[in-house]
Length: 300
Image (cartoon, rainbow, N blue to C red; front, side, top):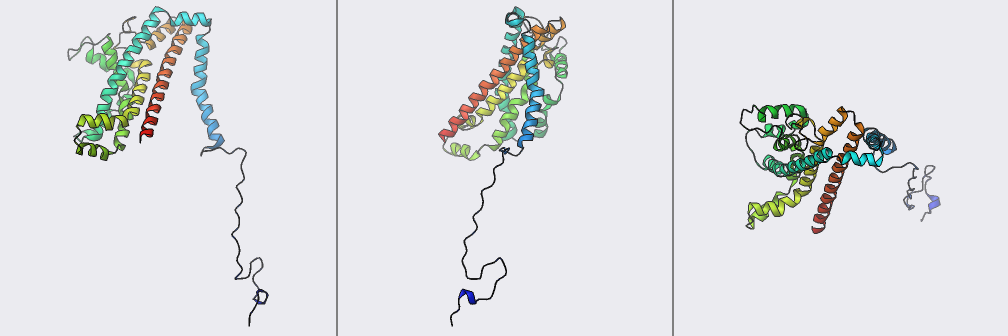
């Protein structure tokens, strides 16, 4: 005898009889919040970050710019084009460029040795790289003055010379290139280098055609950071440099001199120029690094 759906045993309230096919429920679209923000920090985190950045960076820079124009545009121009100011800027930029180039070469070499070679005391050397970050720069100037000053125990006299400025700035800016290149070398694909070596490529060819394109953005970035740090450095050059106008006077020393003789507006004007040089150099290097990265991604 055939039974129908209506002859089956009753089912609990709210459920369907067995054997009856049902379609899965259609999920409702999530409600959109008016204050939804992509990311994990939310509006509060973004607001706190912007507020902190404004208090620490933007407001001091705005105050510095306003102070530099207290005597008008003409006063600003006279302050930054004074012969001693121009000479200090020229010496600062020249020495900083030399330091950046030296750090690019030596920093890349040191990073390569730390990543690719094993030798006794490697951990000690790796830890010493970060010493300029922790050591007060005035201590570095005292040490360099004792080592290369008038009473040099090694017979090298660099006091009050531009080579002395290069040595002092190279010391405080060494970690930038090393720590920028080192992680890239650690993550580099060694199989590509081994394949190139199996095809008969020399070590120089492997470095130039395989390794260098991969680490070039980090080298450029580290060199840019070293340059930006060098043009604003004061402590490491205050003793070894000699502060001789038109010869070894750095811009930071000139700014301090202007404050000591009660010319804060002139000091602020030169500071704005120094800040603009640092910002433009970092912006240019970032653009070049980004363009090189995009070029490599397209070539893959």
